[in-house]
Figure 1 (cartoon, rainbow, N blue to C red):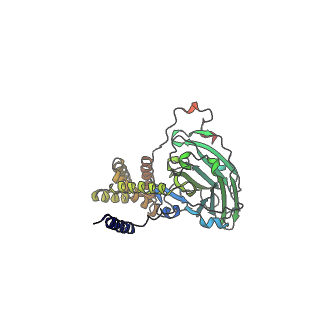
Figure 2: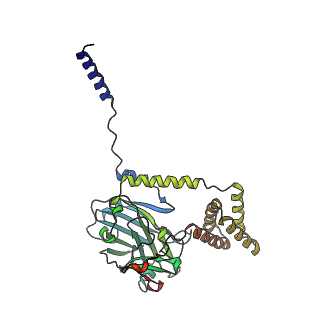
Figure 3: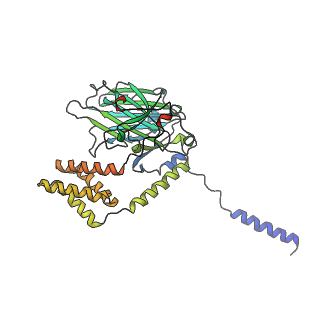
Length: 380
């Protein structure tokens, strides 16, 4: 074959190869599309994707009537200390803009005209809001705002240790947070705006490489026929809200990437694989079910023996602990026997204590930072 023909043949073959090359890969999913695959929980805590809204409300009205709230994430509150259904519905809405985070909460209440708005602010009808720009909260100060129904608000930059006699770290924080509350016939509502600059996001957050931590709680003091109510998004299952290891997770769209979402999905899959490997044997499940029923036995000693056996059975067996927790939660919620509900609640408290240890040891170099100091529970 002549060089000319050889060159022509090469050109034809090459052209054919190029023509058959696959089309360029489709661009990566948009952040909002990728976020649809996010789970509701991560590491046992609620996980929320906070969407980015192009146009923020021109002013806070307190009633969540601005069109921006229609594009927000929904965060539902549950009873904070037990499996009981909330008596009063509480729902939060959240979105972000380029420079701020917006939170709105609707509080159903049969008696909105007589709120408690005196005493310490955390003893009133109100909202307690916690946020931290990052994931690891150990020995770090988080931000807290407490807002009551009358629109009074107080701010804290703190880290309280409930299991260490409520010792705490504390720092100065004077944010430019805007708030507005308004009363309605069925309750009241609140809106809050917090500028991102006021919580000093670190480099990992600014680069879209980190989750945020957040917690929301409602205080509804006792009055009339209703006893005191405590509700939360990411419930602590205890008396204190300052359980930073139980704060929920947040993906703030303004500071997120598709890669961050993929990492979250991979973490969730590993959690699922790990939990799937923890399965109690059928005999153990049968015994646990029988023991829970015996918590309501007519004979006191039988009830006590069942209680003690359940405590021992779940102490060193993770699979038994997991199954017992599910069974006890159902008993606490559904049983007509007050004794069963009471003992189930006590056993659940013991299991939760083991499963949720205080992950925040007191810092050893506390006194070396002049801007941070200890305070005892009397200061908060």
